[in-house]
Length: 377
Image 1: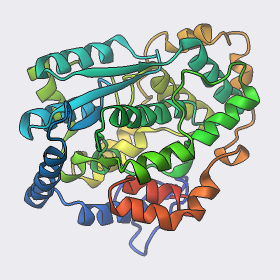
Image 2 (image 1 turned 30 degrees about the horizontal axis):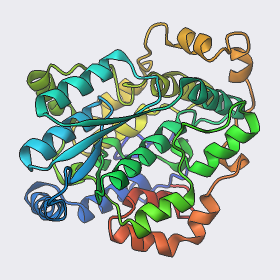
Image 3 (image 1 turned 60 degrees about the vertical axis):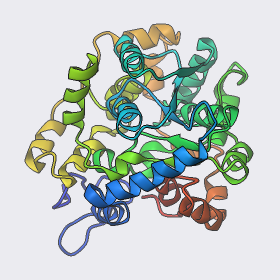
Image 4 (image 1 turned 30 degrees about the vertical axis):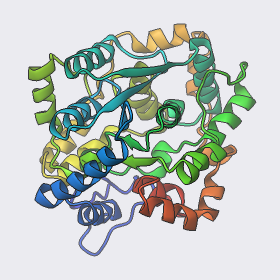
C-alpha cells in the first residue's frame, strides 16, 4: 500500500495522485487553502472586517446572521465565538431529522441557553425522512445521510430569507476536517429527488430539499453569503471540547459526525463495512497536516474499529422496518451517484458562474472546487 509521505491518505483514496516527493494532491490543496485563508493575526484582521460588515448590514434587524447548530464541537464553539468574542446577534438554526442522540440535543440547549441565543428548528416528518433513508439503502450508494446535509443547508437559507439576513455562518474548517474526495460525500437536491422517486413510497413534503432554482435564488438574487470563520483561526478540536465542557457542561458524543444517530451509522458501520470507506481518515489526515496529531498515531487510530453506539444497528433495522431485509441490502452491488440523476453535469457547465459566486462568498470554495470540476478531488 502506497501512503502519502505527509498525511495518511493512500492509493485507494479516490482521485489521489502523488508528486515526486510522495506528497498527495490533497496535501497540496490544503497548502493552497492555508495561503488563501490565513489564520493567526492576518486571519483575525480578515474576520474583524467580515464581522464589521455583518454588523453594519444587520443594523435595525432582530438578527444579523444565522448559524447552524448540531450539538457538535464545531458548531457549539462557533456560536460562542461569534456571540461572545465578536458581538454578533445570531439566530441559531437546527435541522432535526429526528435521529439526534440525546447528548447533542442537550448540548444545543446548554450552549444556547447560557449564551442567550434564539433557536429556530425545522423538524421533518419522521416517517417521510425514514422513507428517504430506506430509499438510499435500496439505491446502494454510500451517501445514506446526504439528505441531512441538504436539509441543513436549505433550512439555513430558509431562515436567512425569512428574517432578511444576508449571512449564513457555518462551522466547517478545512484545517480540522480536510477536503473529502467527492466520491466520499456527493449530494445535491436532484440526487435525493431521483433516488426517492425510484425507491421511495412517500412524496417529499416536509423534507426541505434544495432545487437548483432555489439555490440560485438565494445566492444570486437574495445575495445570501456563506461565511466560515473557523477557516481563519487556529482552531483545535480538543482544546475547543475542553473549553465547552468547562464553560457549558457540554458532553462529547464519541467521534466526528456522531452527534446524529443516522450520521453515526453511516460513518461507523455502513461506510467501512459495505463501501470500504472509513470517514475518520479525513479528520485524522487533516489533523496530521495541521500538526495536531502525529502521523504514526493517526495510522494506529485508523487500525482501530470506529466507535459504534451499542444497539445502534439494531435500532436502525427496527425503526426503518428492514429487519428481515437488512442483510440483503448490505449485500447489494455497490453503486455511486453517477448511477442516478444529479446536478453534477449542470454544475460543471455553470462553473464560470459558480466561480463568480465563490469569489463573492456566495458559495463555499470547497463547493466550487469539488462540484464544478470534471475531476473528482
